[in-house]
Image 1 (cartoon, rainbow, N blue to C red):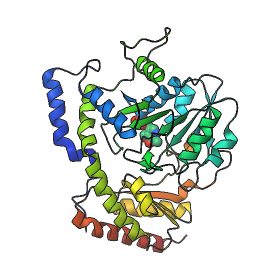
Image 2: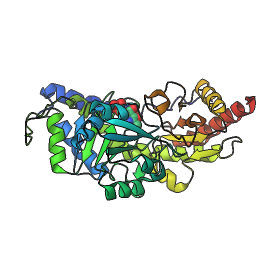
Image 3: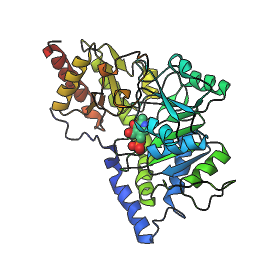
Amino acid sequence: MSFDAAVYQYSHLTVDHQRHQVDAALTAGRIATLGARYIPRLEQRAAALLGRAEAIAVDSGSSGLVLALRGLGVRPGQEVIIPEVGWVSMGAAAAALGAGVRVAAVTETLTPTWEQIAPLITPATGAVILAHLRGRPAPDTPRIAAELSARGIPLVEDCAQAWGVTAAGRPAGAWGQAAVLSTNTYKVIATGEGGLVLADEPRMLGFMRAVAGDTRQPTPQAVWRGKSRMNELTAALALPQLDFLPTLLDSLRALQQHVVSALATVEGITGLAPATAEDTSQSNGSLVGMWLPTATLAEQAADALFRAGFGCWWPGPGDLHTAAAWPVQPEQPVVDVRRYLDVQIPWLPAGEHAAFAHQLAATLTAALKESPC
Ligand SMILES: Cc1ncc(COP(=O)(O)O)c(C=O)c1O
């Protein structure tokens, strides 16, 4: 059975509304970032979604990370702690400001707990970046935020993959001093490229706006200003997707639940994420992760899923999401992240959910049986 109605590029679901808004902006001749109509709307909507005072729309999540660290005053001689899994631009943001990078190992949640972060903290620590990955929250966020706050160390939440995710009852991105979203092609809200940086502190927000290229924004003293603002047409693409987000997430979580139940019966899978009903409600529903006994099995399972037409991710060699492909690695890894893989949950009519989950489980069962390892 093939699932012709499955939509993996979620942005496609609102394409008519996006076309209408882009057309309106073009027809009105309003494409400039300064004086834009859609950009401030997107900024307000994103800030409300994450419960932050303000958002600044930028040209990528990677630019947002640099702005966040710069806004927090990270400087040469300091260090930034980043997690072992995320994206290469977390460390690049620190390096761009002349700071060193230390990498915290991750647990089976694909995120570090406070236990992995604490030993890396020194008087030189300028900030910690915590990434909420694969559509799920970093479970130890409240403790990490509290411990860092007690030490006066700022926390940046990387929410590039976490649209619609909650962590311990609050939106992912509401815990630290700053948060970053991405609207890159592969994200739940996708505009090709784009991002947002969010914070509460007015002086930090003003400074980030200024160095991101807002010429109207004064700074206390002269500073080097760059240009990393979002395009008005990009905001026009993002807004209809934001309107549609609750409907999308309801559908994804419903299918995700079917998939989790079906995969629970597959012999050889040693862990599933989300694992509980609470995990499901905190996730955005876009993925189901699983752990296999060996990296070889995980690679074979990913290969079988890919050949059967399922969307999946396995962090193999050279994958820039993991520290194995970065200039710095964790000193003491906790898990072999190559034992992890996940499948993407498509938008699919509810009547096809059970069959999709069944076929996915059958494909994995066959792949794990075939395997000589
Ligand atoms: C965890 C994480 N952080 C940051 C980024 C960077 O976002 P962008 O591609 O918008 O620069 C990504 C995107 O791949 C990501 O997955």
